Image (cartoon, rainbow, N blue to C red; front, side):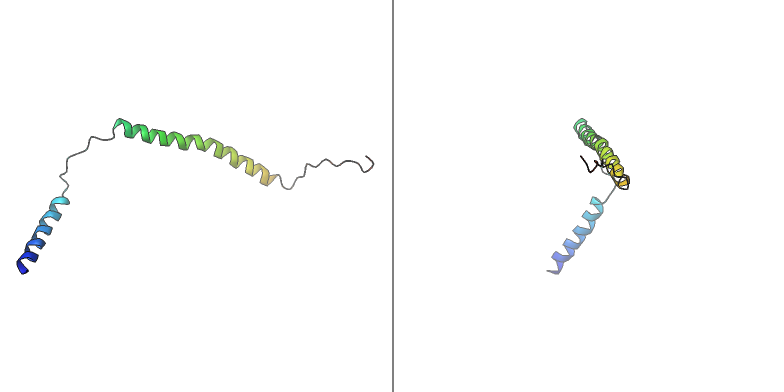
Length: 78
């Protein structure tokens, strides 16, 4: 039992150093499909940005126009 635990400990120490080494082969960068996917996500965010700005401007107009009432009062005789 002692030899098995010593062997496993030694094996774990050497494999941990091998897995943590920085000598891994370099990747090729982003592929075409990955770039298209990221571009599609950016387009979704940008196309949602314009309606969001329009909604915020409308809310600000509504908030700042609360003090003014544009109610047309009719005369009591009509």
